[in-house]
Length: 136
Image (cartoon, rainbow, N blue to C red; front, side, top):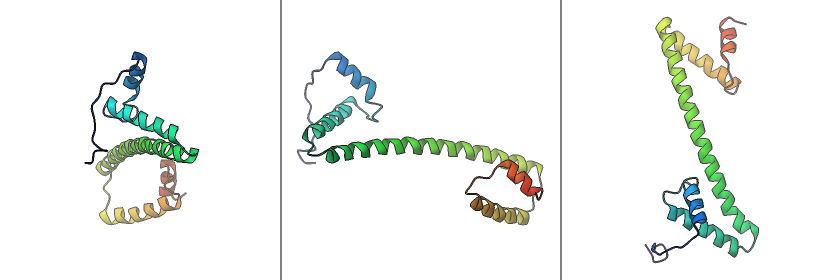
């Protein structure tokens, strides 16, 4: 670790209202500690003051915003996929408990379902499956 990366401890004085803003927002920025949030704020403001062009300043800011948006989106999608997997497992267990499906028929059905899901880009409703089973 070089001297530039070494952290230093110092006393920081700020208005109570400013400290409340730090307290309210540091977790929103995915910071573990308030000092990390303050360091990010200082770096952001220094970038603003030292910018030669708006591109040099805005690019890192936009990149950071996009990363946070993608992370939130990924988390949301992961939770939804988990919920869908649980519902699918329930459905498969109910069907399996009530229907004696031959392994060969199951493998054939799996192949047909793969084709159908590819053809519909994954948009396949229960009603469509019911119609398909009835030959409609």
